[in-house]
Length: 98
Image 1 (cartoon, rainbow, N blue to C red):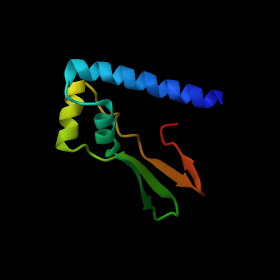
Image 2: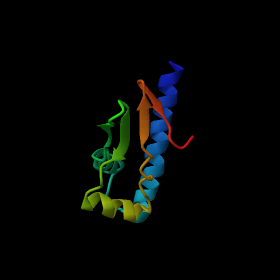
Image 3: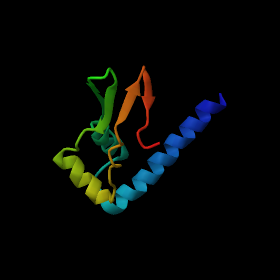
Image 4: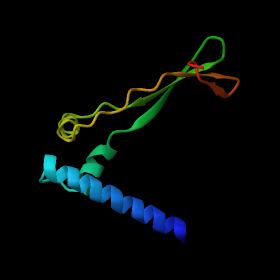
């Protein structure tokens, strides 16, 4: 029961914070519209097999559409950098930065 309350409270705080930003920067938009707009930005894993039996895995975010870029700029937000590729070795993912 407590986890549901915490989750509900977190959503309320997110909604309140985002609503405050929108009032100042993009007055005509609702929090729901913004979240729906950004929901279209997806993260995908692209797998490339190597000749030695391993696999390169690139986790990539789709590029935002023009309207999403405008909204990101209005809010002063940036998408995170694309993460570095990983390589599998016998079904285990290996982080090449380690």
